[in-house]
Image 1 (cartoon, helix red, strand yellow):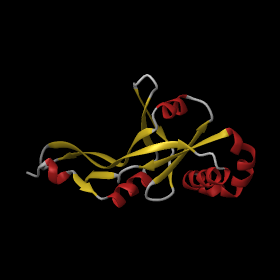
Image 2 (tube, one colour):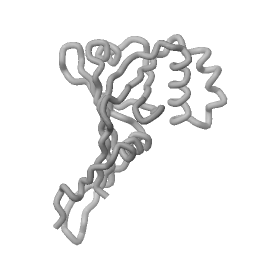
Image 3 (tube, helix red, strand yellow):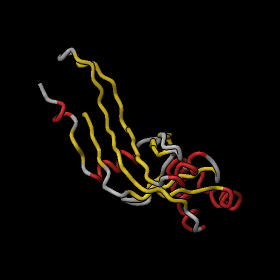
Length: 160
C-alpha cells in the first residue's frame, strides 16, 4: 500500500503556477481589520511568475482588508475527481492543487491597470477582446485593480 507521502507529491513552482492558470477561480484569503479571516474566490490573471491581478469595486470589504493587512494567501484546485478504487475498496479523490503567499497593493498607474484588465479579460473572455478598448474607456476610472506579488515560490500538490 502506498503511503500518503508518495501519493501527495510536492510539485515545483512552475507546476503550481500551471494549477493557478487552469483553475477557474483562485481563493484569496486575507485578514479583516478586526483580525478575523476573510477568503473568497476571485478571477485572477497571472502576468509572470510572481504577479497576479484581480479587479473589484473601488470600495468594499476586500479593500478594507488589504488596507489593514496586505498579506494574502492564494489557493487553487484545477482538478478534482472523487473516485472509488474498486481494487482497494477505498474512497479517494484525485486532485491538483496549489498555494502561494503574497502581498497585495492597489494599482494606481493607468497603463498598468489597463494591462492588468487586458490580462483578466483575455483569460476569461478572449473572444470579446475586440470590445476591450471601449470598455476600458468607460470603466477604467471606476475600477480598482489589485496586484498580488508573491513573496515566496508557490507550492503544488497532486494525487494522480
